[in-house]
Figure 1 (tube, rainbow, N blue to C red):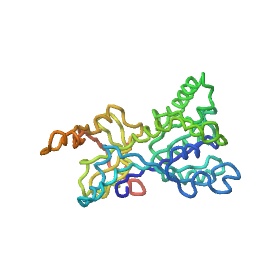
Figure 2: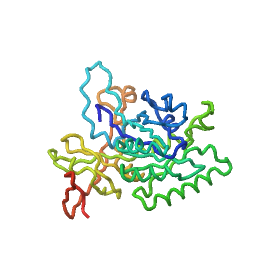
Figure 3: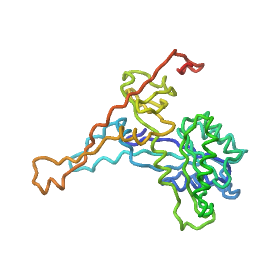
Figure 4: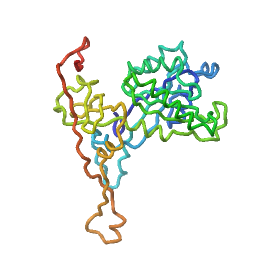
Length: 322
C-alpha cells in the first residue's frame, strides 16, 4: 500500500492463445514498457515470451478504507484529497509449455489468479498446469471464459452454461471450488480484427475481482507481529472463510482474502450506509445545495481464529494443526 492506494497483484494465466494478453489490454489503463508483447521477439513469434505488467484502478471500497492512513490536512483553499484507489496490477504470464519457469516466477508474486480459458476449447494442457501452480501459489481464483464472441449467437448462452458446468466440475476437488466463472470477449473478432467493437464482460469481471478483500482489526494487540499469522484461516460471522494475507505495520489491522468472494448479504453488512445531512446555520436554499453524504457506521462482523495447537514449520512460520 502506498499513500492513498491499496495494491493487489493479479496473475493472468492460461493455455497459449487463450487471449490472456488481449484480456490484460482490455482491463488496463496503464502499461509498462514490456506489456502487451511489445518485445520484437514476441511480435515476431506471436506469443508472450516474458512477464508483462499493466494496471487499472477503481475507487477503494468503503470496507477497505479503515486501513488507510488519514489524509494530510490540506490548506483551506487547497485541493481536496484525491479519492482513495484500489489498484490491480496485472501480471500477464506466458502460456507456452517451454516457458513454465517464467510462469512459475510470475505466480510467486500474485494475490489472485485469473485462469483464462478459450471457451471454444475448454481446459487444455497448460490450463491444467496453471491450475496446479495456482493451488500452490495463491488462495484466490477467477475463471475467465474468453472468446465468447466466437460462439454462434443463437447457441451462445447454452454453450457458456455448458462450459461453466464443466469448469465447476473441474474445480470441485480443488481449493478453488465455487470460484466465480465470468464469460468475456476481450478482443471481439480476434487479434487481427479492427478496434471497432468494445470488449464484452469486462465490467462484470472487474466487479468480481473487487470483492475479495476485507480489513480486519481488534483481533490482535497493536504490537503483535501479525506476519507470524499470515496464511492462517479466519472465520467471519457472516459465514465466509478468509485467509490472513498481510498486515498494515503495527496498527493491529490486517488484510483478509476471501477466496470465494463476499456474498451480497455480507457486502451490505460491511458497506456503510450513506445518509444525507444538511449543514446547520445556512439558509434553506443553501441547505439544499450543501447537503452532503456521510457514512453511517457499518454493522460489526466478528472474526474467529482458533487453534488446537501452535506449530511452527521449518521457516518458523506459524500454521494451524491439524
